[in-house]
Length: 255
Image 1 (cartoon, one colour):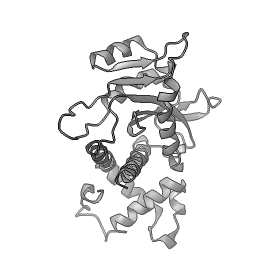
Image 2: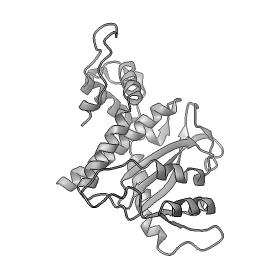
Image 3: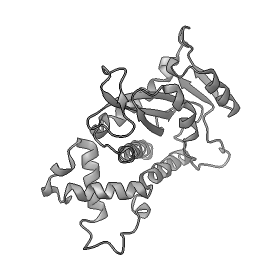
Image 4: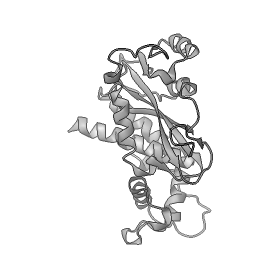
């Protein structure tokens, strides 16, 4: 799936290609899974230097490879009937940032230490649809409409033209009347608890899937702690982790 998406090697690039694309991808996946420093990649595994894999990650992210892969896998899941468009869940999760950089700020849940936040929207079965990385002190409600608008179109069987969910489930952190009005304009029912009022009955059971999705994504140790100063490189790892999660769902369906 990835190979047709890769950009051609630059013709004027000095010297031979350091390692094949497949080996470079294996090195990137090794870092994503084990959260190892680039310069500590084991040479015995044949990945080349960490700088080689890092440059591959940068070049492929600039070409939009990982976002395209995510959209392709979502289309495969939709064609197989494995996407639940009846509802979507939205939530945020804080991650510690070790080296600072763009989109970082004092975390309100970690004694104001520097951190970032992953804003996630998933379907009713926990399939990740879109992740936005912001500073840790960004209010959840400010990203609601951006997450809904960022849901990628996924082609599927005839008779299912709707791309947006029928309902959006969120906790009290997403309580915002302007957002509710905008969601209704888009024919999306906001199911969001209000501050100062009891939680909507049964909401926890319905929103459990997004907590499970965060747990799956943060099993990739490179996402549990952010090391990249540049947000686009961190987002490359996030998109790749979302694609791998979708791939596992697809394999489970096919088996």
